[in-house]
Length: 169
Image (cartoon, rainbow, N blue to C red; front, side):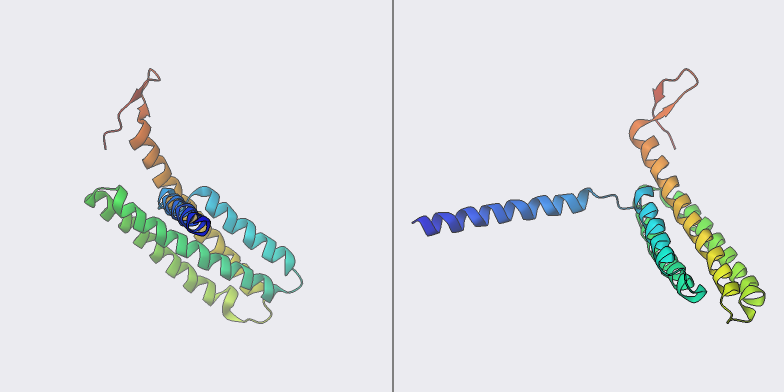
């Protein structure tokens, strides 16, 4: 009898924890938050600080950071589809495509200049630093845009008399 009670209690607790864990996962923002982006930047900087002895190793840290930012950009773009109207989302995608075209041209420039002769790795590290900065900035811009959008939709906006009014988009 006591064993059955313990098993039942354990199953109830396990079930409750499972529901709470699932709910927590659903409650998480679908787009990347500024705090999550700051963590990527901090992790990348820690990696660079740890691997400062060679330009190649520092470059690898930046490349990993770029990869993480690109995943978060994709996540944020995906979340925007559920937040924006169809025409707004299409415009959102156009801005992303323009940024991707810019990055492609920037990459071509860097390959023709800094990255033309590596090693030594300092020129390649410099080029990677530029790419890291632009990718980080884009991830922050997209996250910030959706964060403000969400705030306006939920809370409204302040009018000239400092009253909250609904955000009509």
